[in-house]
Amino acid sequence: MPSARNEERRAEILRAALEVIAERGYRGASLAAVAERVGLTQQGLLHYFPTKEALLVAVLEARDRWDPGASGRTAEPWSLELLGSLVEYNAMRPGIVQTFAALLGESVTEDHPARDFFTRRYVQVRASMADTLRKEYGDRLPGGLTPEDAAPLLVAVLDGLQYQWLLDPESVDMAAAYRAFVTLLDPERA
Image (cartoon, rainbow, N blue to C red; front, side):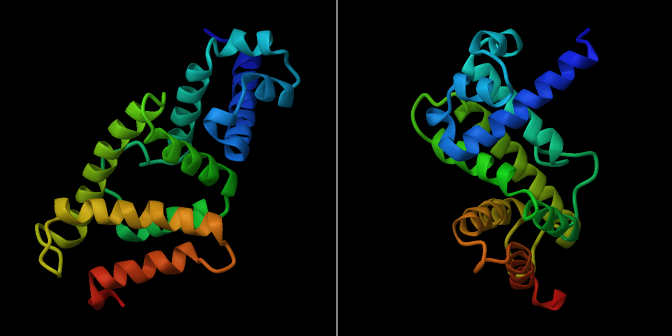
């Protein structure tokens, strides 16, 4: 069992990796840059994460632990209101949102080590969003779509808002735009 000090050091490395990836993207991030940020040699970093890919997987898994529900289905579907709270929370964590966005964007390239993670994650997230929409509206949304038909649209709105906000945070209010989308889904909610 890892010691508390080892766990603290691993968490410190993950935070540094998040920062470096947010700044440089995965391909531009180096183990040396992460190691330097936490005051280790590259060899010292390899003691905790034997490869860059292992560090990437740990960063992605940690990000999903920090965002309940991000990794897919939960015991109880989230409400649209609770999703709105997550949008507001994400607006307070630009570094984590930026890291996620950079990794997601890069993962669509061939042979990217995060590609399988994001592919599995989006299957789970679409299913989770379908559960959320079914909880809110039943088997048909007000516009006639099924929850499964609307789930990819909801995911696209959530992720798309993050990209727009990262590019122009002064002009894009993620929480307000999310609420507008929910009103578009169901004008009765306005």
